[in-house]
Length: 249
Image (cartoon, rainbow, N blue to C red; front, side, top):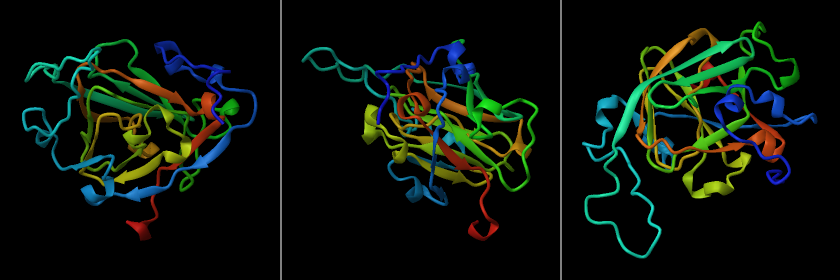
């Protein structure tokens, strides 16, 4: 059931930093996200590409996608126009503080660039910045996702020893995305990820012992963002494991 009409959520700078005050009082349904270990582009088909080196994914190389400017009428864009804004790039910082997982995108020019990207517990009412987690039982609980209609986005760890996870939904679902459409992906150490325009995501997720961490990110300069609160719209929260069993790696 979609609850948007009854409980809309505005993703402004203040709410994105502190969304918990908008969470409903009732217990949230926990939805487990299946995870694929990525070893090639085939594993990311329909979502994006595995990245060996960020320099390989650029507008100049004709493999970093920028979406043509949307038209209001029946006339066509003139040739070689409508997608000339290019990309911006910079650092994307992530860090665990107790139960809170924060992200900050320094590549974009806005004050709406700091996010509570996830929680270390499903019991959000008791979440605090001094909480400790037992080794081997680490999950992240995701309360929202978003997509960029104007272009793709790339993430690459500055520390080559850091593996990470992403949680993605295919662009074909558009604004009708549902929690069950989301899929987790494990990106091995030394690799990055590129996602297609319109792909539902949020940031990148890493184990506590790897944070604070800094990633390189590249994305469309327009930085249009469309978001969905799983909590507000569906009364649910996504559970993504942040550890993979050694037998599966």
